[in-house]
Image 1 (cartoon, one colour):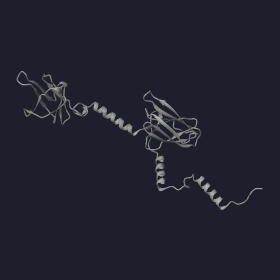
Image 2 (cartoon, rainbow, N blue to C red; image 1 turned 90 degrees about the horizontal axis):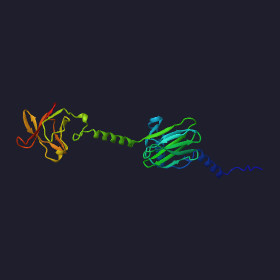
Image 3 (cartoon, rainbow, N blue to C red; image 1 turned 90 degrees about the vertical axis):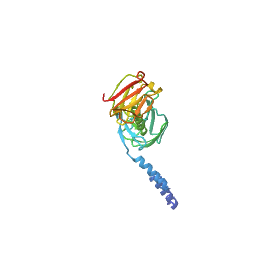
Image 4 (spheres, rainbow, N blue to C red; image 1 turned 180 degrees about the vertical axis):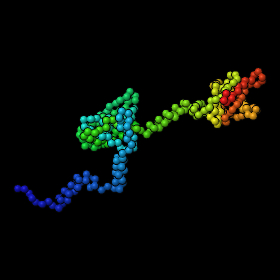
Length: 278
């Protein structure tokens, strides 16, 4: 005979609490502090931001690392290839749902600069989980979603520090093309000077940036006394001040005509004439 005795008041309350907890997922049934609610909101905003997604080589979907939580869409019977930075060493791969999501490692590239690939495969559609990847350089927080037919075949990242590295490379190339002493690129200099006369220390080149004149001597001049510089102005020779930087003589204004003199006496004197414009 079936027992039809009504439930007690306490049993009804317990049952109602269980139902409420089940429906609300256990979140609204718990008491959260203001800080906890704010933290959940901040995390939700970060996870919900779309961010910048661009196309990379070979159709790769590129996320800017750290801007948002990347959402990678995968599909059953397909594979998603998540490529990390070349030379990055993976420490751990942690997946929220390890039963219905499979993650396997692969590599590409030559030894010493190999890139790690995480090959992601869901077992069914309609799944959502998260994955944390810790490496020798950073930590990735990635959301994984599975779709019945749509998926991202290749996924990669742009890294903010790469911009600084590329900028440093550009600066290094510019410095390599900079003329010694002037500190500015060669295309900004005027080399239209003629050099006449014979001397053991005869300048190898003369140029100006419009504000200063640079007279470059053979490297041997760095270990001996530099010649005296006379600037020709108004038909007169005037001794002017200059400074030496190794084998470079730097005059603090643009010179049109100058004479360099070394030695004493008629027979022991060496002289070089410099003219702008030939």
